[in-house]
Length: 490
Ligand SMILES: [Zn+2]
Image (cartoon, rainbow, N blue to C red; front, top):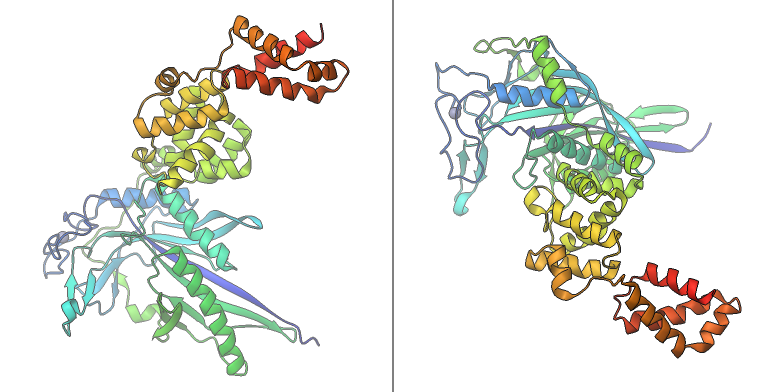
């Protein structure tokens, strides 16, 4: 018997994503953010008696699209259920959700981890309505205010199987999901606006003395940043192991405990003990009909799915001969990928285009604190950058001049051609000029010239240096080298 013990972290994630619709899930109130409280409400989302919800087709379409992109089986028949709970921020005291007939089931999300790619299984994808928001102790008062603008906003819940085994994988899963929904255009996925919320289910599998024990599962509620996901899971793993040791390994896995997370302390705290599905008393929503999408509609939707992030990354490596890292940078957002492909096509030099976008342009954007999430985030248009790439690739200007031109393009909005012309940056390829500079350099450097002829090839550098200086960097180095070598071997 061994005293060795191994501890394995086991995490499943529930992720809620706001769908990008104009109106709420069951009424025509606008989905909004930051408007004065309770200005986007109607009898339906206020939960008045006698009102009838009507399903938002667009929310349904976006939800099914996401489930398809996750490789889920789409249910031919999906329905709505009431999930009962005392919700101070959802006045009808039940949430319309989907219980036993979700939009889609049994999918996969492939993530990239330091150890390579890994497929995380998706258990189910369903739609539900969001609750409102409580504003605690407004103005220091001993009360809370409720804002129902958010109540009824369509939320897609994506539930993974417990396949995640590290904090890094949890983060990769959350960021991959965000990348996926933005590629699909189904959500703005703006983290600051709370468009994505994460609820990890965490426990440990402790193997010792030839037996494996599972600690009770803890569900963390309402995390709203990737950092909170990482820190809370790391804390919970430490806490569960300490609890396991303190209770002398007698802790039984009985039901699930719900805990909250305090981002200031990085610690989790108990909210509710033992919550089970039957506590919610799910039952079919009598006011909404069963949804049975037509096969042809589903087929059409499948056709509209864009190329997904990892497939695009693999294609960039294959088609353009890019490295894994660059391909990752260029597919981080769909806007970045589109931009790069436009520069690659217009310049005719995909590899050079990749270098300019990942280095020169990315550096300038970093300095300005901009991430590529919309076309307007790029400081120069794809066709303007392509013009610069062509100017460098054709030898009109050298790389250093190119960097200078790019900064000037961003600062002034002028094109590469205009700047090269105005600043006189174009390299000289004129044979007469080149030969004149070569003659001068040879006359001024008889020693290196003799050395080169005697076989010391590195002596060429001295002569080249003289020529570049005399020409103020404008001599086309490729042509100069060619002509100089020819001259010295005469
Ligand atoms: Zn409403």
